[in-house]
Length: 74
Image 1 (tube, helix red, strand yellow):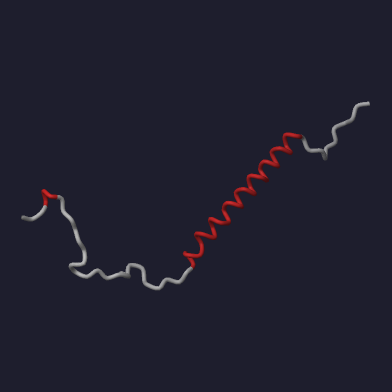
Image 2: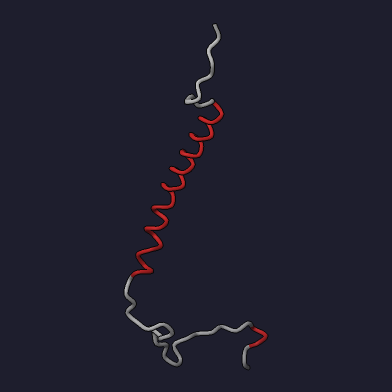
């Protein structure tokens, strides 16, 4: 007697495709959760200053610029 293949049985190929897709989805989810938790909180924080507003003040004469020897004033 030969058995007829049952229609509710899954083939080895289909099982491997489903398992691979499930594992890939799990890995993708596991790596995206920390990434989202790293990016999202700073974007949701209330700003303490307006965009385009300077937050530091540089006094005149506080910067030191060293010129190459051929560009120095004599």
